[in-house]
Amino acid sequence: MSAGAVRRYRNYIGGEWVEPSSGEYRPDVDPADSRVVLGEFPRSTTADVDRAVEAAVAAFPAWSRLSGPQRAAILHKAANILEARAQEIGEALTREEGKTIGEGVGEVLRGVAILRYFAGEPLRALGEVYSATNPDTFLYTERVPLGVVGVITPWNFPVAIPLWKLAPCLAFGNTAVFKPAELTPLTAHLIVEVFIEAGLPPGVLNLVHGPGSVVGEAIARHPKVNAITFTGSNAVGRHLYQIASARGAKVQLELGGKNPVIVAEDADLDFAVELTTSGAFRSTGQKCTATSRVIVLEPLLRDFTQKLVERARSLKVGPGIDPTVYMGPLVSEEQRQRVLGYIEIGEQEG
Image 1: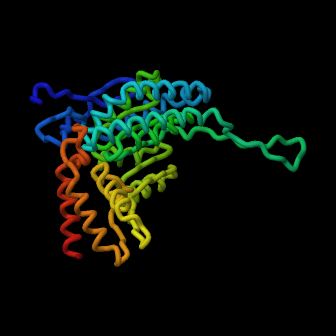
Image 2: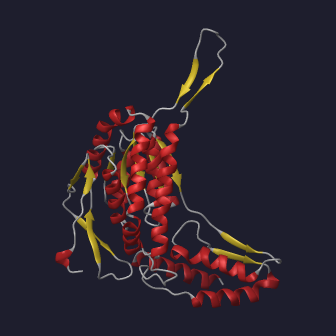
Image 3: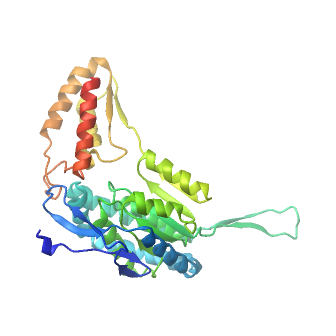
């Protein structure tokens, strides 16, 4: 794609697509071919976060006053639109994140299911009635929206994870400032397009692109952001927790994981190899639930290792957009170097 053909995208704040205050942009590159630039996205500043938070604050009273069925109707419409655009958005996801087209479209359809599920939640009872000691007292609890929620998401599931967070946030009457990963901004843009088309009022969902060290940090520190939800590394999660919780904000974190496979003596080796292969190499292994090590009982070790090596060598690796490929590229050169470093450590440790 030539430089002249590259589209420049913007933030979405208060119902408008707006330029970043910095005037700076970052290229979004196809990891399967770094010569292909998918678009240029804002490098936002704290001023952009301030503007987005104020828009979310202004939109909160009207949005939170809507009935549960009214908000549910918008989420249902968003689900239908997302389903209709599943192939388009799945291809965009594949081109900027690297996972295979089957995984990309499958993730979008997972997003459809998430929206439909949470569209049903505000129709449930949102409080409880209790027996009071005083017979003249009516004692009850009622759940109410928190206000503005900061939504900070990673690049490895750029449709599913944002919707896991945005769908319940919006369903229960909160407004949001959404900061997606810098490596998957196009997918985030398309998600916001879906909500706009579904009729979400201006200011209810605001999109601010940019580096986590600037945009994520500003969201966590902002006194008008009532809650933070973050998925990412342990180190960043701890940092955001310290910042946001210190000022009394609610914090929800989904951080890293370790996922060993255990192969016992009575295991079906072929089945165990296939499950290990899928767990380790699907989504190019770029997920916190990926198989990171295998524990094999010694009598099976030689046969299992031989079968696993043969299976790994048989995998077709290439651009995720190719439907015959089993595993696409890593998301960036930085991630590639990190994985090579892990391999080197493994070899050194035996």
